[in-house]
Amino acid sequence: MTKSEIGQAILRVVFGFIFFAHGLDKFQGGIANTAGFFDSLGVPGFLAYVVAVIELLGGIAMILGIGTRIVAGLFTVIMLGAILFANLPGGLLGNEELPGFELDLILLSISIYFLLSDRFSLALDNKLSRSIEN
Image (cartoon, rainbow, N blue to C red; front, side, top):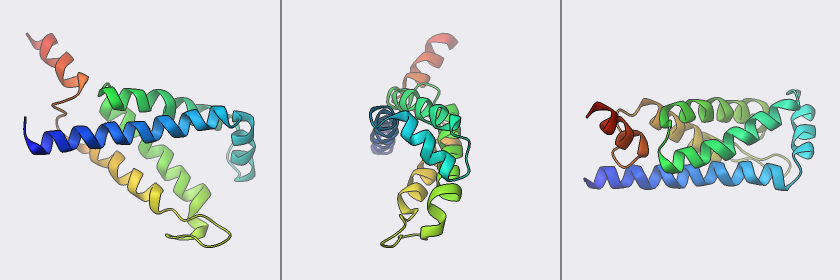
């Protein structure tokens, strides 16, 4: 196990936890409120449910390292949507009236990193593929 593999595992777990927390918050804060917010942005409100479930279950999967590339692809789409539909008007850092998209951009970059990464040594994906090969 290398320092790079440990760093990647820490990044994956923290990244997954952030998405899990955001998905949980959407349900605890009232998913209907989130659906209303989506509608106000011109995005169909039912997508709030889809996003919340992906964030919640995808966050758990990312923490465990299950379906990492698939989840990262879904997170990439979510973060592109968040930037384009919600936070782009506020600019990178935002202002008093509108939030910025700097956090979204970081999460998008991490999503793309996991989407393009070759191997996840400290993930269940890797352990499962090894046991299937043997």
